[in-house]
Length: 171
Image (cartoon, rainbow, N blue to C red; front, side, top):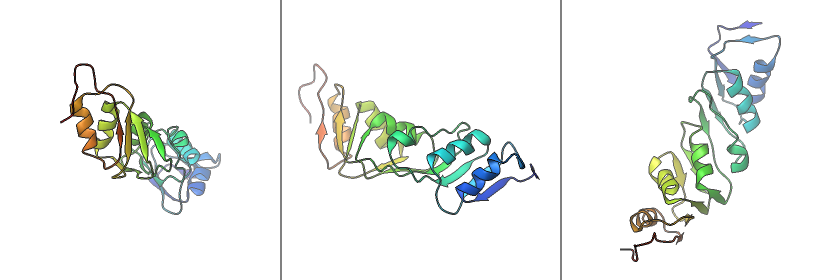
């Protein structure tokens, strides 16, 4: 079957992956894949990302960061709806997942985020990851008072941090 003129393949993730992997179906190199019935697993999204340069639109069923960080977006055009279900997260891993999709990542289940002040501030100011209002932050390297205060202003949760040498107080 020649499906090279098809611009968008829509349906369940299983159906789209079946079409993409079928030796009897030739798809365009740049078809868009839209999962509009059900969700897609990370494994299915990876298959589609490897098969097309077109945008992939889907809600991802996996929620753990260990799995989510394996996602790719080879063409920087995927619109994946992602909800992180882990209760603790490394800020770098959240940033990785955030960079895989054009859709805001929901990380409101995360109770504690650990990372450098710069990583945490990037998450808070990037506008593409939503965290809980009471999330706790652990800053894992010395941080300036200004950065600690910026992070503190973004949460009602607890902050664990060490001031950099030479700074002795927070305002």
